[in-house]
Length: 375
Ligand code: BGC
Image 1 (tube, rainbow, N blue to C red):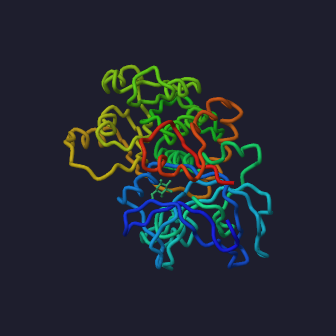
Image 2: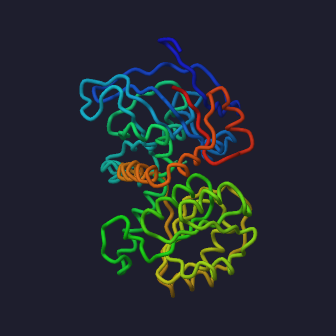
Image 3: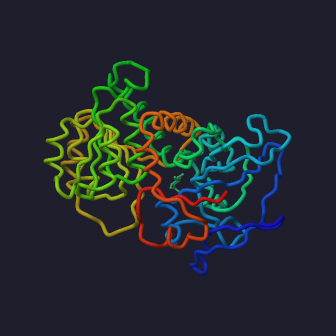
């Protein structure tokens, strides 16, 4: 790094290249902006998909897009209008930036996760550079402060926000019936209810932790047969791992009993729609996975429709996360760390230098969450 440029990893879609290149050092350009030194960046399926050029758009006027949307950084410089942060603070940025349209009520209300025009941008994904670089500049409204005790796990905040936004919607949607016992205490809201998590990747495992902490009896239904490290991790937090390779859906449903909530974090339609057929009365099913475009598969659409109606079921798709979800994720991570320090630590299976980007982005996916350590 020198004053003019720094290292960054990104994609050059026109050349179908993934590369480590020099990127201009950013500077504060508004009073409410901060300069942040990147400490860690998590790698997820979206990054890998961008590297297959199925997704991802550079900013206007740039032929490349700097990757990275799961970041932890340290504030190194603040503008004169910054009120909520000081140098040395640890911060996690949100991902989505609002569209510019006056007629988008969501973006005008800082709810760009529900942008109604589609003209939002996303750091490291859509038309705004990401965080897989040494420094970045951000407005204070897009940053969340993280307590220093969470330094070693805070890179998991963004993937945990997927579950937090999903849960916030589950509580809202289920207000349509007397679903909870009226308790607002976190430990009781899911008590007496059964949740199923599909998939044991980082979004699934972190989601399972959030569900257990919220009181749900929680099952994780995933492919790999036992024994395997993900199953051990899941079982160690008081959830139960069941493999769909050895336990078919009907038998799974028999073992689990009535399913009140399905949290899909697998990104595969086949198993998701099969599990939808065993969702219980008044149940809610939340999709978070983004499958690649593939050939159509047959589903029992009439019986599924009949079931959705006769059982009062709700199906939700959710993407991105608002500030509230980030705040909840930071709060929950502290709870997880206290309750399951070892299991939480195991979610991060590898820390790597930026120079290893090729293997991480283009090689075989391994472990649970791989992280690039920069600062
Ligand atoms: C990110 C979201 C983003 C979505 C779609 C996910 O990987 O976590 O913030 O909205 O991709 O681009």
